[in-house]
Image (cartoon, rainbow, N blue to C red; front, side):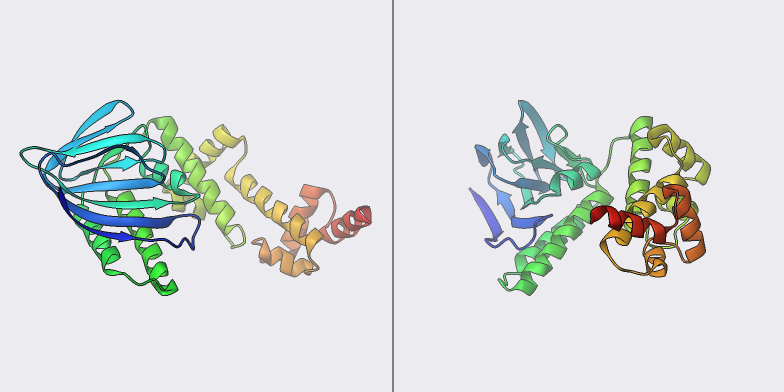
Length: 278
């Protein structure tokens, strides 16, 4: 038996990440769940007591301050301790970006157990979820925001194992590339990219050369030129507007760089490519 509060949702208005259900339970001694298979992801966090979690042939003995991840299609079983049964909260969720989000915070089916330094914030967020029983669109937006807060709290408070040097280098490059793709239209410099990933310029240059065989500035230029080509061929925007939309505040600089890249100025490139399409 268990004493539980739950919230179940039926509508799905979001696709990247959405809440399926959540709850809190105070379990009786030896209370268990499973063996079973779930259709979505679930994260449990233990607030009191202890118990065991079984997944993929592994047994994990867990206590307050720890939690575990269940992934879709995975057979699991978990049971409260006989002497000190656990109390836990859970959040069920799914979405197209869930796997990448979980990987970013260090949770996978191979590494499903975590320790959270500040579990109180997780309790507060789930408490807010349970208080929101509105079926309106505004209520769903509120729950969506709370779910992202839950993930942010996990990312900030989970005790992560130390990354290997190669994993750290790959992560720096990945985050730098994401920053460039999301901000190429701004007047960003390599210094801004290095500051974002918290490394110096020379080290970032070394990492890019090692991973992509090009400098960060070259990668930024490649992204900008690719977008400039699309705008020139798919819109009638002026060269000035195209330049500014790709992060260049100076049209002359844009034209010079474009000519170096495509061997002709942007106006001529647009004209000749459109002739080829006729």
